[in-house]
Image 1 (cartoon, rainbow, N blue to C red):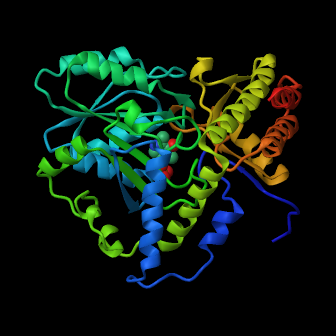
Image 2 (cartoon, helix red, strand yellow; image 1 turned 60 degrees about the vertical axis):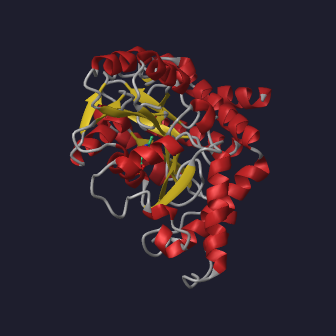
Length: 393
Ligand SMILES: *Cc1c(COP(=O)(O)O)cnc(C)c1O
């Protein structure tokens, strides 16, 4: 293989760039099952995730899995056979969660998804009021839908559940917003929170987790559906081997412990402020690129645009996939493709995790270079606008 000098930049919305401190923490021999140091790492992660999620109520259960595993453990513990999950339409990820719920033999009730807009909380209230038979056991809400790059209003969703008088649990997927956008489990009155390692948590893929409050633990305990690996009761063991229902993903855990330390050392407020600033720089560039009428924001509501990822549409006749190839192979900037109905019509710039100003400027410049090569018309001052935004701070 030919050598490519310098860094290759990864700007997908997960997996994200992994800091050296995290890679170095993973570079060690595994421990034997009885070694107390492993228990200490697991405890540090449980404590750290609770602090990150801002919960005293929630207990953290971890799985050697990706985010889909964390979805599945929520489905099989919370939704008894014959019951349903209400899934507000936020984009491709809400749809996939609904499909997985049905794949597990449970019902999924969907609220309509309008491309480019966040979920409408009124639809949640309406669907819950219509559920007179009380089939719906939980509302599965995606905080930031990584496909539509739209962040949904959790407070409004919670208020809609309350207004309906329905006892459904509130389950929130923060896979793409954790450690990027402010979120507090207890203040949001979320009963279950779903996360994974490879996005804002700055770690390699392979760990899914949930935080579960007491009410949700009681609902799960009363659910007769057979389950084993995903069962939350099993996760309440003290011995690490039992807690993971087998060998824990040790080296990944060492990495996540280090990643949490980095987040707390930077300070969560600073982490959120950094994401807000870097995303506003990306938005300033996209706004500028849009001037020629070919490039446009997928999310039509500026205040709902995510701090983690931006989905950028390209007019008919232009090929975002070809542009992405040029960006990756010639300019060493990897951006993501679009998902679901947007496939082939848009691309996505991930801007979450271990990221700073020169990295995001490099990504924007790489995309501009690739669009130039491909003859895609765009407003020329994008990087300049991003610089101006960063300079203001
Ligand atoms: C990435 C993502 C998932 C799925 O995570 P995997 O680790 O790819 O299974 C779920 N929900 C959201 C919002 C995501 O961004």
